[in-house]
Amino acid sequence: MNLTRILSIVLFVTSLALAYYLYNSINSTIEFRENIETTESQIIDKLAVIREAEKVYLEHYGKYTSSWDSLVNFIETAVLPITVKTETIIPLSYGVDSIQVTIDTIGTISARDKIFKKTFVVNAADHGTFLGFFKNDGDYVVKGTKSYKFKRTGSDKIDELTFLDKGTINSLADINPGDNLRKGQNLITFWDYQHNPKVNVKTLRTVPGSGKDFDIFVSQIDRSGIKVWIIEVKDPSPINPARKEDNEAKNRKPLRFGSRVDVTTAGNWE
Image (tube, rainbow, N blue to C red):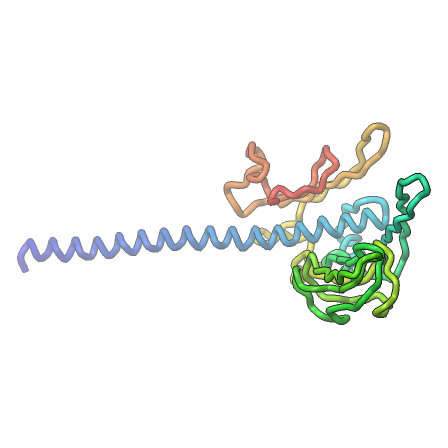
């Protein structure tokens, strides 16, 4: 075997080794980035649920909680009232309309459902005559599809209203074709998930990827003589090396929502 052939073999083997090294390096980088994206998506899902749970907890108890056990127990066991706000327009003699607001309790809902699900309502668009629903209780509806039809008072035209959101109908008003409608009258209630229902509530405190607990800060501050509650929840050990506490860009800091000094629940991933 001559020297030229030996050099050719050596160069060929070296080229294969270099190609494998480059491929492995690029592939590892891609996998690392994909792992960061997947993990951060899971972290954001948990932060969104924690934020909503804390907001519902504040609404119910008048304060946030820094206890994970209390928060999880609240999500799993609390039962809350369902209220519906109805606005009635009352014409006055001097040409100005008065708005009468009535808030009725129409049932109860579990804290879990209130946190994970968003409820939508369809109210009567105007005074008139109800002509019928296009959907039934339990139907899944899509935004833009027809919801109900009616005739406005003083008009022969039939109006067909559409859904502005998607979801599953869980309540239709007890009303029949030919009945009178009041503007603002509740006709349809439906819901859809607003947060990932696969989030494990029992491990809500645990940060995906690191296994550490989220940092949670709850306190009260004075705003113009009024005590208001503030909250901050953040990932204490980001898997993403680009997320550092001292980054100037807010959206490049560790994933979090809320603030230790301001009244806000905004998340820096939004």
